Structure formats: C-alpha cells, structure tokens
Length: 185
Image (cartoon, rainbow, N blue to C red):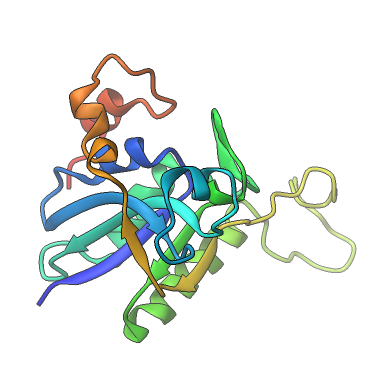
C-alpha cells in the first residue's frame, strides 16, 4: 500500500530535489496544492487561483514514515516564517502539510504541536523565569505552518518537473549538496 502527502513552504523545484531520492519515496511531482481547478502556474504564482505551490510525495509507509518525511521537510523549510523563505515569498509558499488519510491527522497535529513549543522553557513557577526566549512577545517564535486536508493536487506542466536536474546551474536557497551529505534516510 502506498500513501500520498503534499508539502509546501519553499521553492517547489527545491522541494522536489530534497525528496526525490530517499528510500521509501516512490515518486515526487511539483504542482499546485488545493488550488482552483485547472489552475496554471501563473494563476497560482499570482495568488488568483489560491492554493500553494509544492510537491506531491507518494511513499511506502513500510519503508519511510510520515514523521521522517516531516523531519526532512522542516529541516529545510522554516515553519516560523509567515509566507515562504529565501527568495520565494507569498501566501502560495507558506509552509504546509496536506494529508489525504485521516489516520495521518493526529500524527501531523502532534508534530506541529512539538514545533510550536520547540525552544520554549518549561513552566518553572509564578515568579521564576530561566532564560525564557519567549518571555518577550517581540522575540517569541510563532508557528505559521499549517495542516490541511488535501482536496486537490494538480501536477505542474512538464517544464516544471525535474527542473533542477535539467538546470543544475540554478542558484538555490536550500543547500542541497550539504543536505545530502548530512542526512541519510
């Protein structure tokens, strides 16, 4: 049995490269997540079709589980940036997890809850605060990553599939060579 999940939060070409060669991942396609029907690249890029730019990942849950996919995703995508990262900005680039299976929902919710509390000091008492980075509202990190039910995925046109493989000279925000050297799944 194979499962499907869609992820957003960075340049879709970079996300495709991040996920394409890991054990247990069957296929990765760039495209438009929960966008209006028959949306074109420019429609999603300008925000007129709604939805997000990202990747569809088909995987074998016996070889790689959803928490490993999310670990890899949030190693390269910041969940604390409101709309994208690097040179890609806008609501169509907001970090998101789009799930198909209801059985995945609790695990994704737990993962996002962990990210929301990451870096926060435990409660230490009414009058005692120990190096709490969240004691200042201005310094507090806010989780902007979302989880939503996947309602549609439209693959991008062929020219958008495997883009970085065909154009290796393209500058990327994510250091793909370093990622491959550091992460072994």
